[in-house]
Image (cartoon, rainbow, N blue to C red; front, side, top):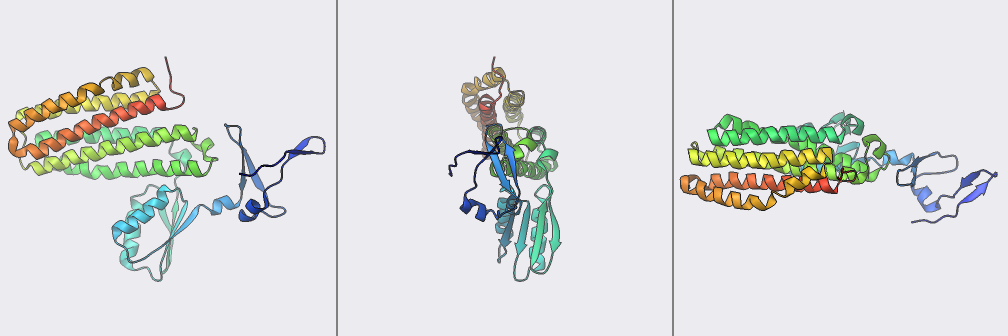
Length: 330
Protein backbone atom coordinates (compact mmCIF):
# COMPACT_ATOMS: atom_id res chain seq x y z
CA UNK A 1 0.00 0.00 0.00
CA UNK A 2 1.24 3.45 -0.94
CA UNK A 3 0.26 6.68 0.81
CA UNK A 4 0.28 10.04 -0.95
CA UNK A 5 -0.74 13.53 0.17
CA UNK A 6 -3.36 15.19 -2.03
CA UNK A 7 -2.11 18.49 -3.48
CA UNK A 8 -3.77 21.32 -5.33
CA UNK A 9 -2.69 23.22 -8.39
CA UNK A 10 -4.19 26.05 -10.40
CA UNK A 11 -6.68 26.79 -7.67
CA UNK A 12 -9.14 24.08 -8.73
CA UNK A 13 -7.34 20.80 -9.58
CA UNK A 14 -6.34 18.14 -7.05
CA UNK A 15 -3.50 15.75 -7.87
CA UNK A 16 -1.40 12.94 -6.37
CA UNK A 17 1.86 11.44 -7.62
CA UNK A 18 2.11 7.82 -8.74
CA UNK A 19 4.62 5.51 -7.01
CA UNK A 20 7.65 5.15 -9.29
CA UNK A 21 8.08 1.40 -8.75
CA UNK A 22 4.44 0.68 -9.59
CA UNK A 23 4.44 3.02 -12.60
CA UNK A 24 7.55 1.44 -14.10
CA UNK A 25 6.16 -2.04 -13.53
CA UNK A 26 2.95 -1.02 -15.31
CA UNK A 27 4.87 0.46 -18.24
CA UNK A 28 3.83 4.04 -17.48
CA UNK A 29 6.13 6.80 -18.73
CA UNK A 30 5.78 10.52 -19.38
CA UNK A 31 2.79 11.05 -21.67
CA UNK A 32 1.13 7.71 -20.86
CA UNK A 33 -2.62 7.71 -20.33
CA UNK A 34 -4.45 5.93 -17.52
CA UNK A 35 -8.17 5.42 -16.92
CA UNK A 36 -9.66 6.64 -13.62
CA UNK A 37 -12.72 4.61 -12.65
CA UNK A 38 -14.89 5.51 -9.62
CA UNK A 39 -16.20 2.52 -7.64
CA UNK A 40 -19.42 2.24 -5.61
CA UNK A 41 -17.31 1.73 -2.49
CA UNK A 42 -15.92 5.26 -2.90
CA UNK A 43 -12.54 4.09 -4.24
CA UNK A 44 -10.97 5.38 -7.45
CA UNK A 45 -9.31 2.75 -9.65
CA UNK A 46 -6.22 3.73 -11.69
CA UNK A 47 -5.98 1.48 -14.76
CA UNK A 48 -2.94 1.59 -17.09
CA UNK A 49 -3.07 0.26 -20.67
CA UNK A 50 -0.85 -2.66 -19.67
CA UNK A 51 -3.74 -4.30 -17.76
CA UNK A 52 -5.18 -5.65 -21.01
CA UNK A 53 -1.87 -7.34 -21.83
CA UNK A 54 -1.94 -9.11 -18.45
CA UNK A 55 -5.02 -10.98 -19.59
CA UNK A 56 -2.89 -13.43 -21.60
CA UNK A 57 -1.26 -16.67 -20.54
CA UNK A 58 0.91 -19.41 -22.07
CA UNK A 59 0.74 -23.16 -21.48
CA UNK A 60 4.00 -24.93 -22.30
CA UNK A 61 2.88 -28.27 -23.70
CA UNK A 62 4.57 -31.49 -22.59
CA UNK A 63 3.86 -35.16 -23.17
CA UNK A 64 0.65 -34.94 -21.15
CA UNK A 65 -2.44 -37.11 -20.98
CA UNK A 66 -5.78 -35.69 -22.06
CA UNK A 67 -6.85 -35.21 -18.43
CA UNK A 68 -3.68 -33.29 -17.54
CA UNK A 69 -4.02 -30.96 -20.52
CA UNK A 70 -7.70 -30.46 -19.73
CA UNK A 71 -6.88 -29.46 -16.15
CA UNK A 72 -4.27 -26.97 -17.39
CA UNK A 73 -6.65 -25.36 -19.89
CA UNK A 74 -9.64 -25.27 -17.54
CA UNK A 75 -7.58 -23.63 -14.79
CA UNK A 76 -6.59 -20.81 -17.20
CA UNK A 77 -10.16 -20.48 -18.49
CA UNK A 78 -11.60 -20.34 -14.98
CA UNK A 79 -8.85 -17.89 -14.06
CA UNK A 80 -10.40 -15.40 -16.48
CA UNK A 81 -7.68 -15.22 -19.13
CA UNK A 82 -8.92 -13.83 -22.44
CA UNK A 83 -6.13 -15.30 -24.60
CA UNK A 84 -4.69 -18.75 -23.89
CA UNK A 85 -1.69 -19.89 -25.93
CA UNK A 86 -0.61 -23.54 -26.03
CA UNK A 87 2.94 -23.92 -27.31
CA UNK A 88 5.46 -26.70 -27.83
CA UNK A 89 8.55 -27.59 -29.87
CA UNK A 90 6.27 -29.36 -32.33
CA UNK A 91 2.60 -29.93 -31.54
CA UNK A 92 1.56 -33.40 -32.67
CA UNK A 93 -1.78 -34.05 -34.46
CA UNK A 94 -3.21 -35.95 -31.47
CA UNK A 95 -2.31 -33.01 -29.20
CA UNK A 96 -4.15 -30.65 -31.55
CA UNK A 97 -7.18 -32.90 -31.39
CA UNK A 98 -7.05 -32.81 -27.60
CA UNK A 99 -6.87 -29.00 -27.56
CA UNK A 100 -9.86 -28.79 -29.93
CA UNK A 101 -11.93 -31.22 -27.90
CA UNK A 102 -11.19 -29.43 -24.62
CA UNK A 103 -11.94 -26.01 -26.11
CA UNK A 104 -15.36 -27.29 -27.23
CA UNK A 105 -16.14 -28.09 -23.60
CA UNK A 106 -15.49 -24.48 -22.56
CA UNK A 107 -18.16 -21.98 -23.48
CA UNK A 108 -16.94 -19.27 -25.86
CA UNK A 109 -13.34 -20.51 -26.21
CA UNK A 110 -12.31 -20.60 -29.87
CA UNK A 111 -9.07 -21.34 -31.74
CA UNK A 112 -7.87 -18.22 -33.57
CA UNK A 113 -4.38 -19.20 -34.71
CA UNK A 114 -2.45 -22.42 -35.32
CA UNK A 115 1.16 -23.09 -36.28
CA UNK A 116 3.46 -26.07 -35.82
CA UNK A 117 4.51 -24.73 -32.43
CA UNK A 118 1.54 -22.67 -31.25
CA UNK A 119 -2.24 -22.79 -30.79
CA UNK A 120 -3.86 -19.52 -29.72
CA UNK A 121 -7.34 -19.58 -28.20
CA UNK A 122 -9.52 -16.53 -27.53
CA UNK A 123 -12.44 -16.32 -25.12
CA UNK A 124 -15.32 -14.61 -26.91
CA UNK A 125 -17.63 -14.56 -23.89
CA UNK A 126 -18.64 -11.14 -22.59
CA UNK A 127 -20.14 -10.74 -19.11
CA UNK A 128 -22.86 -8.51 -20.55
CA UNK A 129 -23.87 -11.26 -22.98
CA UNK A 130 -24.27 -13.85 -20.19
CA UNK A 131 -25.82 -12.17 -17.11
CA UNK A 132 -25.18 -14.45 -14.14
CA UNK A 133 -28.82 -14.35 -13.03
CA UNK A 134 -29.97 -15.80 -16.34
CA UNK A 135 -27.15 -18.34 -16.25
CA UNK A 136 -28.33 -19.52 -12.81
CA UNK A 137 -31.87 -19.84 -14.20
CA UNK A 138 -30.57 -21.95 -17.08
CA UNK A 139 -28.44 -24.14 -14.80
CA UNK A 140 -31.44 -24.78 -12.55
CA UNK A 141 -33.75 -25.61 -15.48
CA UNK A 142 -31.32 -28.20 -16.85
CA UNK A 143 -30.54 -29.61 -13.40
CA UNK A 144 -34.21 -29.89 -12.45
CA UNK A 145 -34.97 -31.73 -15.70
CA UNK A 146 -32.00 -34.03 -15.12
CA UNK A 147 -33.28 -34.91 -11.63
CA UNK A 148 -36.80 -35.64 -12.91
CA UNK A 149 -35.49 -37.82 -15.72
CA UNK A 150 -32.95 -39.59 -13.49
CA UNK A 151 -35.70 -40.67 -11.09
CA UNK A 152 -37.87 -41.77 -14.01
CA UNK A 153 -34.97 -43.75 -15.47
CA UNK A 154 -34.36 -45.44 -12.11
CA UNK A 155 -37.99 -46.29 -11.41
CA UNK A 156 -38.78 -47.44 -14.96
CA UNK A 157 -35.34 -48.92 -15.68
CA UNK A 158 -35.05 -46.77 -18.81
CA UNK A 159 -31.41 -47.20 -19.86
CA UNK A 160 -31.65 -44.79 -22.80
CA UNK A 161 -32.98 -42.01 -20.57
CA UNK A 162 -30.31 -42.78 -17.94
CA UNK A 163 -27.53 -42.39 -20.51
CA UNK A 164 -29.09 -39.12 -21.69
CA UNK A 165 -29.05 -37.70 -18.14
CA UNK A 166 -25.37 -38.59 -17.74
CA UNK A 167 -24.53 -36.84 -21.03
CA UNK A 168 -26.41 -33.68 -20.02
CA UNK A 169 -24.11 -33.27 -17.02
CA UNK A 170 -21.51 -31.85 -19.41
CA UNK A 171 -23.87 -28.96 -20.28
CA UNK A 172 -24.03 -28.04 -16.60
CA UNK A 173 -20.24 -28.18 -16.31
CA UNK A 174 -19.85 -25.69 -19.18
CA UNK A 175 -22.24 -23.18 -17.62
CA UNK A 176 -20.79 -23.50 -14.11
CA UNK A 177 -17.26 -23.00 -15.45
CA UNK A 178 -18.53 -19.87 -17.21
CA UNK A 179 -19.75 -18.50 -13.87
CA UNK A 180 -16.40 -19.40 -12.25
CA UNK A 181 -14.59 -17.58 -15.06
CA UNK A 182 -16.74 -14.48 -14.66
CA UNK A 183 -16.14 -14.47 -10.90
CA UNK A 184 -12.37 -14.64 -11.46
CA UNK A 185 -12.59 -11.71 -13.89
CA UNK A 186 -14.56 -9.74 -11.34
CA UNK A 187 -11.98 -10.39 -8.62
CA UNK A 188 -9.13 -9.38 -10.90
CA UNK A 189 -10.76 -6.36 -12.50
CA UNK A 190 -13.14 -4.03 -10.65
CA UNK A 191 -14.19 -2.50 -13.97
CA UNK A 192 -16.32 -5.56 -14.67
CA UNK A 193 -18.67 -4.72 -11.79
CA UNK A 194 -20.46 -2.23 -14.06
CA UNK A 195 -20.67 -4.82 -16.83
CA UNK A 196 -22.24 -7.52 -14.67
CA UNK A 197 -24.46 -5.14 -12.70
CA UNK A 198 -23.56 -6.39 -9.23
CA UNK A 199 -20.82 -6.24 -6.63
CA UNK A 200 -18.18 -8.90 -6.12
CA UNK A 201 -19.89 -9.97 -2.89
CA UNK A 202 -23.23 -10.47 -4.63
CA UNK A 203 -21.56 -12.36 -7.46
CA UNK A 204 -19.79 -14.61 -4.94
CA UNK A 205 -23.17 -15.88 -3.72
CA UNK A 206 -24.29 -16.54 -7.31
CA UNK A 207 -21.07 -18.50 -7.84
CA UNK A 208 -21.80 -20.55 -4.71
CA UNK A 209 -25.35 -21.30 -5.87
CA UNK A 210 -24.04 -22.40 -9.28
CA UNK A 211 -21.60 -24.70 -7.49
CA UNK A 212 -24.41 -26.24 -5.40
CA UNK A 213 -26.54 -26.81 -8.51
CA UNK A 214 -23.59 -28.47 -10.24
CA UNK A 215 -23.44 -30.95 -7.36
CA UNK A 216 -27.16 -31.62 -7.73
CA UNK A 217 -26.57 -32.40 -11.40
CA UNK A 218 -23.71 -34.73 -10.44
CA UNK A 219 -26.06 -36.65 -8.15
CA UNK A 220 -28.73 -36.82 -10.85
CA UNK A 221 -26.09 -38.46 -13.03
CA UNK A 222 -25.20 -40.75 -10.11
CA UNK A 223 -28.84 -41.86 -9.78
CA UNK A 224 -28.85 -42.61 -13.51
CA UNK A 225 -25.67 -44.67 -13.17
CA UNK A 226 -27.31 -46.58 -10.30
CA UNK A 227 -30.27 -47.25 -12.60
CA UNK A 228 -27.91 -48.70 -15.21
CA UNK A 229 -26.30 -50.87 -12.54
CA UNK A 230 -29.66 -52.28 -11.40
CA UNK A 231 -29.89 -54.70 -14.31
CA UNK A 232 -33.66 -55.02 -13.75
CA UNK A 233 -36.55 -52.75 -12.73
CA UNK A 234 -37.03 -51.90 -9.06
CA UNK A 235 -40.04 -53.33 -7.25
CA UNK A 236 -43.10 -51.20 -6.55
CA UNK A 237 -42.25 -50.53 -2.89
CA UNK A 238 -38.83 -49.20 -3.88
CA UNK A 239 -40.05 -46.98 -6.72
CA UNK A 240 -42.70 -45.52 -4.41
CA UNK A 241 -40.07 -44.50 -1.85
CA UNK A 242 -37.73 -43.15 -4.53
CA UNK A 243 -40.48 -41.02 -6.06
CA UNK A 244 -41.64 -39.67 -2.70
CA UNK A 245 -38.15 -38.75 -1.57
CA UNK A 246 -37.43 -37.25 -4.98
CA UNK A 247 -40.55 -35.10 -4.77
CA UNK A 248 -39.51 -33.79 -1.35
CA UNK A 249 -35.93 -33.02 -2.39
CA UNK A 250 -37.09 -31.45 -5.63
CA UNK A 251 -39.50 -29.13 -3.83
CA UNK A 252 -36.79 -28.10 -1.36
CA UNK A 253 -34.40 -27.33 -4.21
CA UNK A 254 -36.99 -25.38 -6.22
CA UNK A 255 -38.13 -23.31 -3.23
CA UNK A 256 -34.52 -22.57 -2.25
CA UNK A 257 -33.64 -21.35 -5.75
CA UNK A 258 -36.82 -19.24 -5.86
CA UNK A 259 -35.92 -17.74 -2.47
CA UNK A 260 -32.44 -16.88 -3.74
CA UNK A 261 -33.67 -15.35 -7.00
CA UNK A 262 -36.45 -13.35 -5.27
CA UNK A 263 -34.24 -12.48 -2.25
CA UNK A 264 -37.10 -13.76 -0.06
CA UNK A 265 -36.00 -14.49 3.52
CA UNK A 266 -39.40 -15.83 4.59
CA UNK A 267 -39.29 -18.50 1.90
CA UNK A 268 -35.64 -19.28 2.65
CA UNK A 269 -36.46 -19.79 6.34
CA UNK A 270 -39.43 -22.01 5.47
CA UNK A 271 -37.05 -24.22 3.48
CA UNK A 272 -34.49 -24.38 6.29
CA UNK A 273 -37.16 -25.39 8.82
CA UNK A 274 -37.54 -28.67 6.90
CA UNK A 275 -33.93 -29.67 7.53
CA UNK A 276 -34.62 -31.51 10.78
CA UNK A 277 -37.10 -33.89 9.12
CA UNK A 278 -34.96 -35.06 6.22
CA UNK A 279 -32.61 -37.56 7.87
CA UNK A 280 -35.52 -39.33 9.57
CA UNK A 281 -37.47 -39.61 6.32
CA UNK A 282 -34.52 -41.04 4.44
CA UNK A 283 -33.54 -43.48 7.18
CA UNK A 284 -37.04 -44.99 7.12
CA UNK A 285 -37.10 -45.08 3.33
CA UNK A 286 -33.71 -46.83 3.16
CA UNK A 287 -34.87 -49.57 5.55
CA UNK A 288 -38.07 -50.20 3.60
CA UNK A 289 -36.31 -50.20 0.23
CA UNK A 290 -33.49 -52.52 1.30
CA UNK A 291 -35.93 -55.01 2.83
CA UNK A 292 -38.09 -54.97 -0.32
CA UNK A 293 -35.24 -55.69 -2.76
CA UNK A 294 -32.07 -56.74 -0.87
CA UNK A 295 -30.25 -57.89 -4.02
CA UNK A 296 -30.39 -54.33 -5.34
CA UNK A 297 -29.63 -52.69 -1.98
CA UNK A 298 -26.42 -51.00 -3.16
CA UNK A 299 -28.02 -49.23 -6.15
CA UNK A 300 -31.08 -48.29 -4.09
CA UNK A 301 -28.89 -46.88 -1.32
CA UNK A 302 -26.92 -44.81 -3.86
CA UNK A 303 -30.13 -43.33 -5.26
CA UNK A 304 -31.55 -42.50 -1.83
CA UNK A 305 -28.27 -41.05 -0.58
CA UNK A 306 -28.09 -38.85 -3.69
CA UNK A 307 -31.62 -37.57 -3.08
CA UNK A 308 -30.67 -36.76 0.52
CA UNK A 309 -27.60 -34.87 -0.70
CA UNK A 310 -29.74 -32.95 -3.17
CA UNK A 311 -31.98 -31.77 -0.31
CA UNK A 312 -28.85 -30.64 1.58
CA UNK A 313 -27.70 -28.63 -1.42
CA UNK A 314 -31.13 -27.00 -1.44
CA UNK A 315 -30.65 -26.00 2.20
CA UNK A 316 -27.24 -24.53 1.33
CA UNK A 317 -28.85 -22.43 -1.41
CA UNK A 318 -31.50 -21.23 1.06
CA UNK A 319 -28.70 -20.11 3.40
CA UNK A 320 -27.16 -18.19 0.49
CA UNK A 321 -30.53 -16.49 -0.02
CA UNK A 322 -30.32 -15.24 3.57
CA UNK A 323 -26.70 -14.11 3.28
CA UNK A 324 -26.82 -12.30 -0.08
CA UNK A 325 -26.66 -8.47 0.13
CA UNK A 326 -29.90 -6.85 -0.99
CA UNK A 327 -32.12 -9.69 0.28
CA UNK A 328 -35.63 -8.53 1.13
CA UNK A 329 -36.29 -8.79 4.87
CA UNK A 330 -39.79 -8.53 6.30
